[in-house]
Figure 1: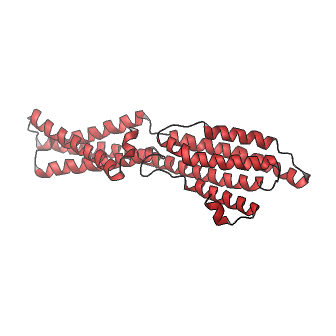
Figure 2: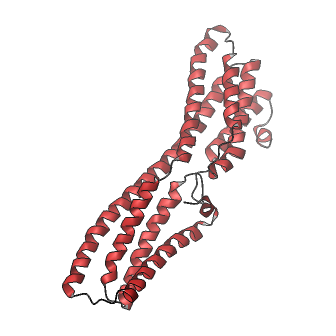
Figure 3: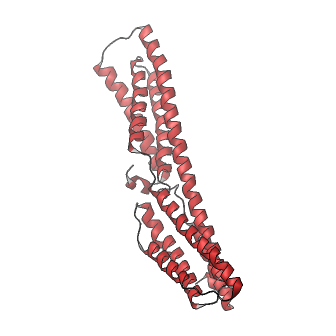
Length: 273
């Protein structure tokens, strides 16, 4: 699905897809009636209706499978964003235990990483792009954490937890980026589109009448709505129904509040910085 369509309002996006399928259904029906001037017998129409039931059932299963697949992918992407925010919060809290230059630098890099993700990477993900600055910040933070020298048994016992959180953050970021790249395969798109067109084709043997025209338009519109749902959920970080960076923004606010408390500043003052 072209990315330009995801910049449209949701109602217009859905109207274009549903209206397009209605035009395809009615256009094909009228063209068939004009070009194929054949009068079908009652038995032939009954057979076509029976075939319509079979083909429509198979097509409905394919569309349901596609819809469930994109919905699960959307949920996985949303979960990846929440997990990344939770891990960032936990890592920032663990690093706050140390009061060394390396730990403060690591916390600063973590805050900068969160800001780059929200301000730059999120907009890039909507376009299917991934700037390298956020990844480089994680690499820098990884090296800085490696230079932390624990003082005493309590801090030494906390270092394995910090390393675990750091590796978990890298994994959470990878899950988010992979979820943003997941799309419905072109083969599946081809199969469901072809199956839908075959379903509509079986209705063309019905005699031309206002009722049959309405039935074809209704069936086409329903198929169009399902295709709209699949398309809207296919890219979890693009469009009106996209996943937002709110969990990471709340993490940034939490880290700012902790920094303010450490410096003896009011939390509200830190939130405005």
